[in-house]
Image 1 (cartoon, rainbow, N blue to C red):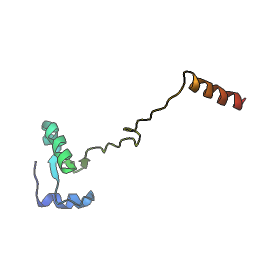
Image 2: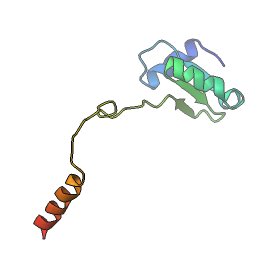
Image 3: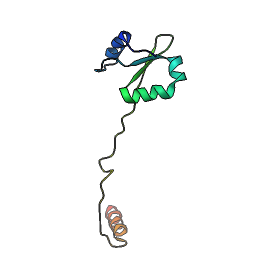
Image 4: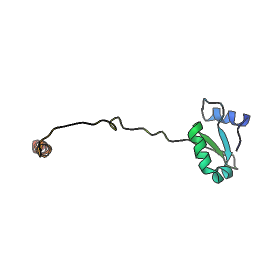
Length: 94
């Protein structure tokens, strides 16, 4: 695994604004995959280069949470009120 001037053009190729990212060979990435994933998590991305020159970018997936994830609603409903509301909707569609 290496960092240096060779990575700078690849960083621009992948549109990264950071200086340089880790560029590693496929063989090294396979042997040290957990370390490559950790490095991608901390630095934003890792480029893996195959023998034929093909480049792949490994980057963590951004996890988007639902805007309703931490919202709690308290509703005081009588037993069966939801069912009766659903029945009304079904009857109105007939």
